[in-house]
View 1 (tube, rainbow, N blue to C red):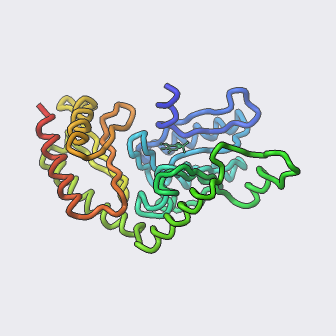
View 2: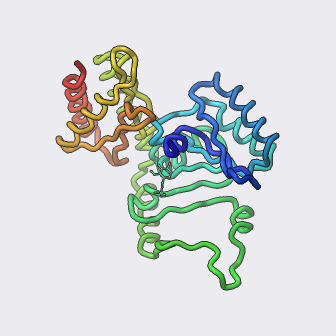
Length: 279
Ligand SMILES: Cc1ncc(COP(=O)(O)O)c(C=O)c1O
């Protein structure tokens, strides 16, 4: 339950409260925004909100792309309440969605961002970056005590890997490549979905963060088909993952270096697996 709340909702950090955090729903369409604004304002009247923590595009929650206007609304609420807007970009950063940061899609500047995963291309490093005035206040000069510590904090080898990884992203222009090749990928997935039936297969994505949501013919989430297809493709050497509340969404996040021929092969194999899995 705790995890499904975390991945499907926005996290409000409440100052001076024993409950510490509240969750509000992640919006699906622009119609949800008015209700969300009401809810956030009501929370703000009840408590002092310290921060809003949100994924710009939800990853494990189902590649959920928020409606336009969502981040402008969060920015407005944070500015009004004196709260921080924290974007969890652990999944979405460094070209995954076709921009350096997924928050760029929504034209807002968060106060703090959490980064990990692609920061090193998969090795042990994550980081939290923020405006200097916020970070300096949270971590003032130490008088000798450990203000913040962790087992692998700032390991020099891994930091060198992160720098090398960032240089590669730039040198190979992998951020813009993700946007371009992601569009080609999505178009091919849309063609496949058309062939298999758009009521069964609904693709979406930004850059190379792509998903295919699967439904049974009665409109219910097709989690067993998603699992069957995932297992079959794994046996054939391709790694995808079911995601979302009902685990009926296939998550497709290939390396940013993926070639067009790999995409064509993947689409063929996925198409065959889906055709065999649907009754
Ligand atoms: C959006 C998001 N945030 C945070 C995490 C956890 O990151 P870490 O393992 O570095 O704590 C994940 C892991 O999948 C994630 O997808």
